[in-house]
Length: 197
Image (cartoon, rainbow, N blue to C red; front, side, top):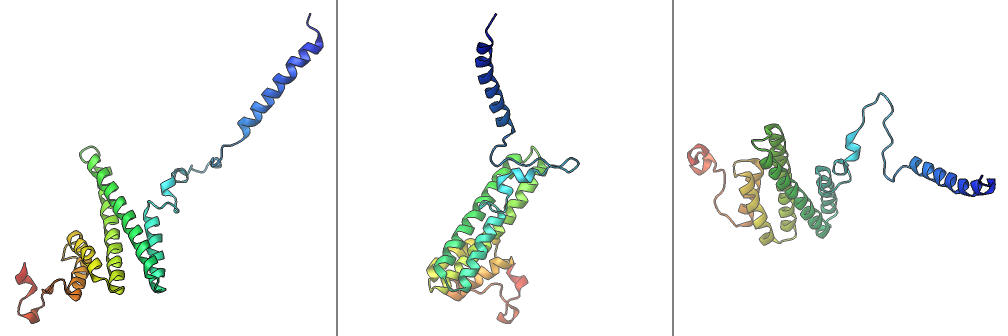
């Protein structure tokens, strides 16, 4: 027979270990989500970090940079505006490239996914071109037209000269003096727009 003191000396550490283990299982990891109340659907967006509003690699992140740039321009803080616009342009360009790569990867495999990613690529490319246009305008405001020219040419190439933003970019090139042929030509110049097609 084992003396009762020996049993107690063996039992106490075991019980303490079990109580510590039990309390550790009750502690939630840092950042864990509170389970949704029964009957309400779980919210998977809460678990996706890039779906959050504070992510820089998102449409919202790019828009925050654009808003900061607008405030800087309104306050005539052009160096800050340049920095924010360059960052926004980079974010939108990366997003557009990533979405296009995904669209290409899913093409022929799942057209629904490919079309969705292609649409996002076009949307973010449009935002990139808007940021690029604003960046060119800030360069002009700082009397640096030579820095605006390559940005404006990129916009005309991306948007095409017939789309609104492409026309605006070409008009800026005309005002700077980089190009000398107005577009679109008006009927008063003796050439109808239809004749240029």
